[in-house]
Image (cartoon, rainbow over all chains, first blue to last red; front, side):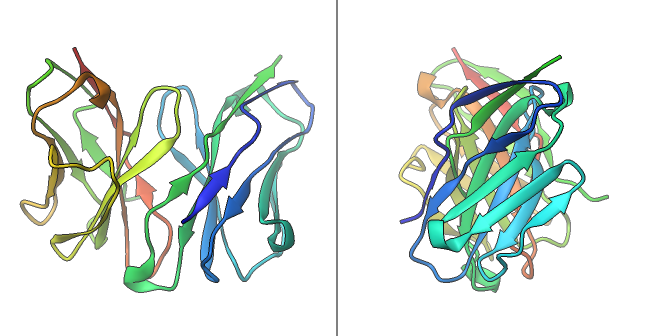
Length: 118
Length: 113
């Protein structure tokens, strides 16, 4: 069975602070994909990043960066110089992957509520 | 840019009534999903659908739920006799064969009174 744990229920920071959201996962699959989604107060799910299990290279996109470590089964997300607009719920998710019909359901973590104060 | 659409955005119903939530996936996608998010909780998988049949379902997806692709564009989730605990946001998602990324619709907020 797959499991995603986001131990941080809520994080509160002041604007311009850096913040890291933790994600730890469990899976027996050798091939899998990890995702981060943002859910703003309006409720939609906004895709942020996908990472496959064979690619441990860290990624940076503007103020966002992701650190994937298979050795610790973690896929952490850092926001540099946070802004008020970053306030949202952030979900980490996992799906098995082997191509085609084998891509399965997304298993989500509990989410981390990030509040950025001005 | 193509997107998944869902209607209605908000549905209010009385307990025991049937509801149908509608989704229009991205046109060339072949795999379809429904997820549920009870207020303040995580997003939970309900069901996946491919080639006109259910490919996987969760324990939440009991006999009260059904899915259908009645034509080439719509994908529906029916709840036969709603319960108070069915109140949640329901998300539809779709993906194509080559990608692991599921594209989510904006959700339908279902309120059961």
